[in-house]
Each structure stands twice: as C-alpha cells, then as structure tokens.
Length: 362
Image 1 (spheres, rainbow, N blue to C red):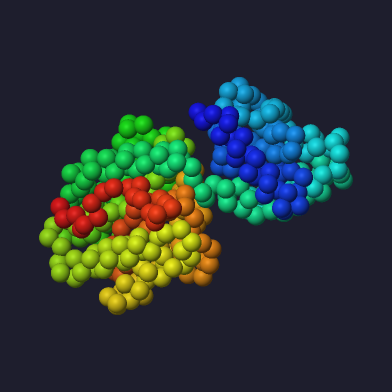
Image 2 (cartoon, rainbow, N blue to C red; image 1 turned 90 degrees about the vertical axis):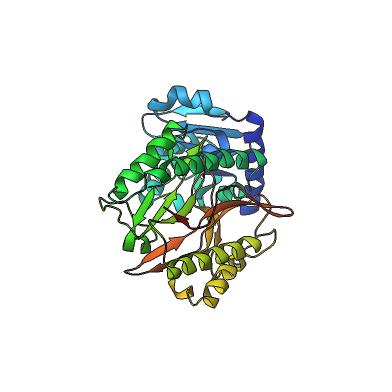
C-alpha cells in the first residue's frame, strides 16, 4: 500500500488541473483513475475531488475495504450506488461546476447524476485530466512495472520448453496465465495471445484449439499485473529451422524495433517513434504489412497514453512508460512481432523488459 503522502501529491496536481479547466471539482468514475488518486481497488466506486478534500462513494460490499485502502477524506457507503450517492451528497451544497470524465460516463449515468444532484450541480465535461498525470510515472511505479516484467519474462522462459508440435494454442495460453498467478501476479494484463501458423498474421488472435505444427511460426503476447501495474511482452518463435524468408522478416522487424527505440527521448513527438519503425520496414518492402501503431503507454492499464502512431503530435516526457512493438503480418502465411517495454528518461530511455529478442528456433 502506498503512503497517504503519495496520494495527496497526486490529488494536489489534479486540483491544479481543475482550476485551469474551470471546474470546482471532479467526479472521478473511471476505476483505474480512482485507484491512482486514492488507492481503492473495488469494482464500484466514484471519487469526488474538491478543494475541501476527497470523498469516496461506494456500496455495502466495499464498506470495510474502502476504509482500509481508500486514502480519501471521507467514505460514503450507499445502497443506491456511487453515482446516485455522489449526486445526493452534492444536492444540499453550494452551486458548483462539477467536472465529469466524459470518456467514462454513459448518457444513462449522466442522467442519474443530474437527477440526484439537482439544479445546483452544473456538469462540465473534461477529457484526460487524470490520465495526463498517470502518463508520467514516478520511479516507484516504474519499479513495480519492472517486477511485473521480470515475472512475465520468467514465465515465458518456463513455458517455451513446452512448445512442440501437437500442443494446442489454448493449452499454452492457460499454462502462461496459470504460472503467472503462481509467481504472484493478480492476473494477466489482457487476454493472453498464443497464435500459430497462418493465425500469427492476426495481430490480436485469440488462442484456439489449433494444434501447433512443425515448421511454422508461434507468436506469444502476454502481460502480468503485479501490485496493480502491468507489463506487455511479445516474442515470436519458429518450430524447426526457420527458412531464409522468415529469418529476413524477423530481422527487419528487429531493426524496426531498434530504430523506434533509438527515437525515444524527451520532447520527441509521439509520431516520430512510429515513423522510425515504418521507415525501416519500408526499406525492406514490408511496411504495407505493418497494420497497427508502433506502441502505447502502459501502467495501471495496459493501454494508456502516449500513443505512438501516425499524426500524434504530442511530445514524450521523462517518466513515460511505453511499448515498442512493430510487426509484419502476411495473410495466409504468418506474422512476426517483437514487443518490449521501456521507460523514457531525462537522458533518453531505459529498458523495462529484458529478454533476448532474436528469433527463437525450437
């Protein structure tokens, strides 16, 4: 559990954002943001951040948990649910310009909030206020991600000897997730990807009952959640001796990965990292087979800002934690991806994941 001081620092930073946004307070409803600001990990909660303190709203299932782990000024437990409870809490108070997280509230939820809050509560839509704070990690946050990465790397290394013809994709995925939990993870950061043969050309393939075969690619994309922080790692292996064209494709993806990594530094536009990877694949005449962005931020969630993609003009900052994951995907043939996590530092960058990225041949 983090100290109350760390949460107070985060809330103070958010309050400065609220003043600039013209809000008297913010009702935080996205649960990862609630956790970031007060440490509460329940599945039902909303946090009201105002000048006078923070109020955590939850229901009876979390009455004890909210008091134990929620670093809020006050906890309100209501059978009506967090949103209605927040509105009712605000109703008798002075008129206020209340910020809401527009990306995380449905129209139905906004209706509940308005109805329970009454006419005094004027809602103002905000976007990404807490997410902007979360994008810049403190050293202790990156340290947790490194521990998660070491766990995931160790588990993948344990499972690779089980990769052989006849084993089903879904069996390997289950083995990875089982071993992650045995090693201390609270769960996978996302649905583990194990794809084989032509299915490796699907960037987000779900593992199936397909059995692995000799002389084909197998792609592993896995992540662990440890102490509420995520990692994300992808490696591609070949069952047998890889033919020349597969080795050439893998080498091109590795070069694109390295070029993107070298482009990472403070003040670099997000799109520049993506461009560096694409330029390498273009030289290898493989750029048309690279069908997603080069990377994304990660932390409490596996997909956060920054987004390393075309047209993204924002600048990297020291403290960002990002993935670098170029790939090529040839329909009917197969796909190759190499993904690592890195930290943006004042001097450039530092690895979070540390695992051999050469083509593994089994």
